[in-house]
Image (cartoon, rainbow, N blue to C red; front, side):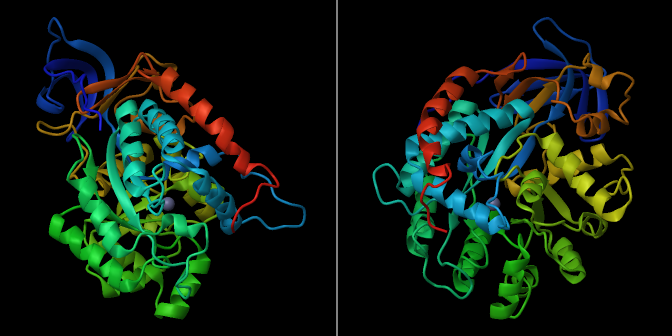
Length: 469
Ligand SMILES: [Zn+2]
């Protein structure tokens, strides 16, 4: 694995405005040493050698990613005459792409995805990686993990690598079909892979645990994964209730709805992130919020796949924790995820500013919630800029027309609801500038690799190409 070589140890940033733990502060000097923040002082003056800039925000965690699916974007937006297209037909094409992946293609796609993430303001990513069942030198779990780490290093993003257990075809189907076999490792092999990667991860990356879903993992194995998460104090991630069909199947086989079953049968706490808690009833909402678990919503992917609406207002009213993820990467823009999260609720309820509870400002409320929930999903306490915290931040151009006429109160509302690309000038991850003057440091090389690798692989997504449903 490649080491990071260009940390900007000992630099100082002077921000005319910065979002700190207590809210907005002006004329802020932030010291960065060895990848973490040192002293942070407000009402300061710039000193020779400071990097002077406009607006500084803590970077967000993208709490749910399947990097390889970036190559699928735009290939799934048509349907055969008289056919109904659903999540399940989309999955057929996704399986074709998964079957075509080798380590070189995975690294090229993931590097492009991660570079796009960093340029848009995500400074860390939880890679929910279930392609663990390859058995060749180009597809083994270890080689794929190295490919994702290589992509993280190229892009500069902070990676939380979450290998994902995948054991069976469905609740009542122990056998895997041909495509799903690519995802499967027995529990022993899965845990061996987790330990192997855990013990050799370079800074600043971290590891977590994952189980694909209740339909793809046995209760006994999920219980063991949960116990290891508690013992090792690492985050654990799980798809939970994305589609009504899996809720119905869960009721039929386990006698309970997915969130209901999980909370009744396992010790779910703040280490857990439940992805796509879309189809949950009121009892599940309140109990899930009380558990301390984080819900990761992926609004643009959930919209693209026709998943449904997460009961956001009810969950937040109950004190629930929220993170966001770009999941299939049909969109890579955290502000757009937050905007669509709110818009879905408005369309459903006929009301406005649904996510604004005590904070009153919807954009600010959503950003702060995604910051805190994303940090939890990554295994951190919070995502704030404070001494000792990781030096992960984004710098926005405060002269951009987007901000004209806005005060502290509405700055984040303007960012979330503008619908335009955020005016990001710079992005710092672990003390390293990954984006400067609005451009990713390695954008050209990463894009060239992506073009070369994906051009051949996308043949499998053309109409008439074979595949296993
Ligand atoms: Zn997912």
